[in-house]
Length: 438
Image (cartoon, rainbow, N blue to C red; front, top):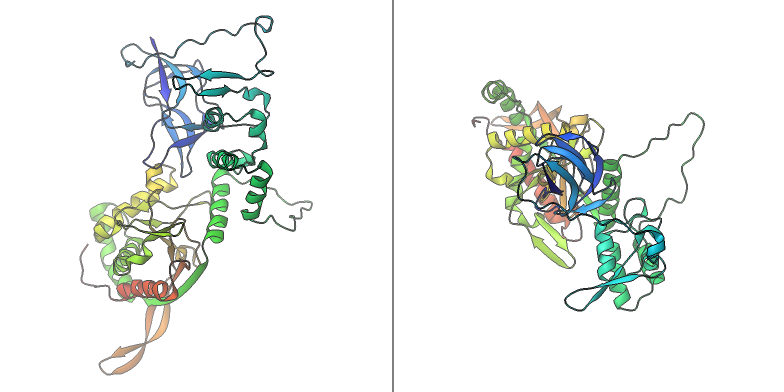
């Protein structure tokens, strides 16, 4: 047997840290290779982390609730010899001396000297009743921020925790000579206003605690409405050709692919084509700069059994044919509802599509997924009498109609562009070729 150090693995290109949600094993438990060891949460998705070795869990280094950087140690495993790699065992921890033989570090902060001559404070975080992530602690040590100073920093994270941004803002303001009180006032001035009237609770009312995902959704939706002035344009499209075509080919597609052919990939195809015609909706805002995205990555909103919403991303949607889009859509939806998505499945979106018609809604005014600048909602398809042009004059016929609504960021997308995009999506849907194959 050999001791190996398990580290927080890299879970995606954009993921640099994760929060420990729960340990699925306890010290002393036998672990199989690739067996799920713990559950972590990133800012995108919850996922389980498998063990990289078989053996016995000796020690847990990262506690539940801690924010851990990718590459940081999270546990020590006593691995089987044939399975253990050359990973060195962690250095043994020296036994603390008795209080009679050592000074109390709570009274006198210590410092450590590095090769460059810079001294960093050795802080005793046990003196604080607040929780600080390892990343925040490291920054505090590097910047010589005392525990007393750390406690004065207003936290914007969950349950008031100090985040990386909070402590870096504090460092910046301190360098400029700004007081902590001024930092607090600045944060309050830009924070969303608290409800003026508290909720009223009466006998028989049920109080339901928001889960982590619902809290995250709530925070992001409020942020999006605060950041972007939303404008919504509406168009009604005649999708009769699409309805008839799908009815004609869906059985063959099911037999050939073993999966259903829904309307969603057809809608995604139309959106991707329209974005190619109007690339200035495929952008993001960075301060006073506009970032024009090269790839067209379309997110599709998926309702989960829990009632929450998640938005996996179809990368390079404009480069896939209809059959390819159908396969990707079905795969993402299935994995989303089975909690099998990976962090990268939710990253990199440049535009979003939401099908509110799934719930029988005829239209909606969706909220933009930041940092994107647009989102289209597809309403329910309904049979309606409509005037159509024929070689013999106008006539009234039963047609399949639906509404499309495009919410866009009016900081960078004006009505002409926002309205033209959704009109172009409708045009592609209405001109759908009933003779095409799949």
